[in-house]
Image (cartoon, rainbow, N blue to C red; front, top):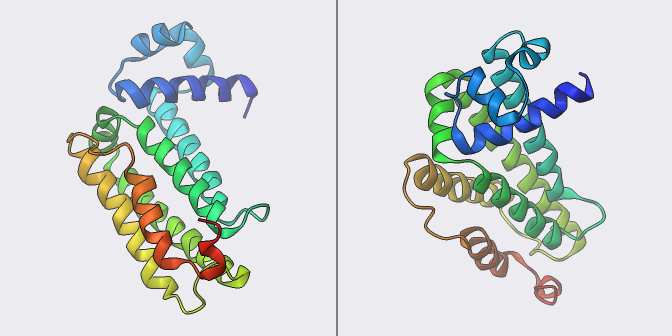
Length: 194
């Protein structure tokens, strides 16, 4: 994929995240300060542009998930950084974008949601195992239960609050839920890092 096409995907995705997917190509081109012809030179259709934007967003999410097991940080730092990046990603998505995505591409959103939760679970499990090896988490954690708890807490809150157009009830939700739960996960060694 050309760097120019990637640039257009990034610009279009930023606009879509705030204004939704129902913009016409004329409206999108105007907001991007390019011609409609320029968009058609890089994308066969509006649907292809949408698809390329979604693939870019999912790819970014996959890269972000690797933060939970970054070898340059201890498990607690990885968990904090991963939750921070997840919060940033969620706050970039407007209810309009999510609702348009659900209506226009229901199969894609449900399959991606399932794979995103699965990827999140795997990375949280890997983080918990990393922390137990490092001695910063309690050695007897139920890794599967805790990872599922985090998944349901994070994604459940997001979908309930954002997708249903309810106010995102707390800008500090991610930090609060993480710090509260870290206190129960850490060992005595890990407590020194909190």
